[in-house]
Length: 194
Ligand code: ADP
Image (tube, rainbow, N blue to C red; front, side, top):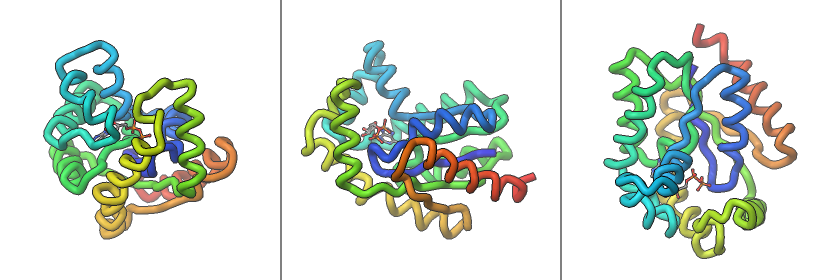
């Protein structure tokens, strides 16, 4: 079972992916987390990615795709994956499909967490107080990330809708409420893939 979680920055992808991975025994792949880990450890990848993350821009596809492939290869025996923050461009989406196909795998379900923009800004600024994430620190950086999402990522909804794999849920309410909506949706579709 392979799931893609979509949503604007702050929509709760990471939080929800952490529940879903445990419930369905999936490997959680968050490209944002991997980039941040590399920046923290000052690796070559971290050095290349840092300026993009700090300014709220997407990291170039070539770099991101390479990293994604490495993560899948490292967990190739997994029962399935939950992708959080990947794909974020059409090229990444096409690449992911082709890469999975070579491994006789495919994306089963893509789910978008829909949250009102004002709520998102509020959530991100609050998170920024604790996370110290540079990209969470100012409204202009948050705006830049929204812009990237609207220009490059949201088009993927159509890409997956054409494959009949796209669904969206209300990402507002308590963490638990959103979790239950997600679980209901996944359980409803689970049997299609058996
Ligand atoms: P959020 O969704 O809250 O912005 P993420 O951790 O998913 O947080 O992403 C943080 C940053 O990491 C992005 O703004 C971007 O710079 C980089 N990033 C993460 N995933 C990708 C991706 N698939 N393609 C390009 N850049 C990415």
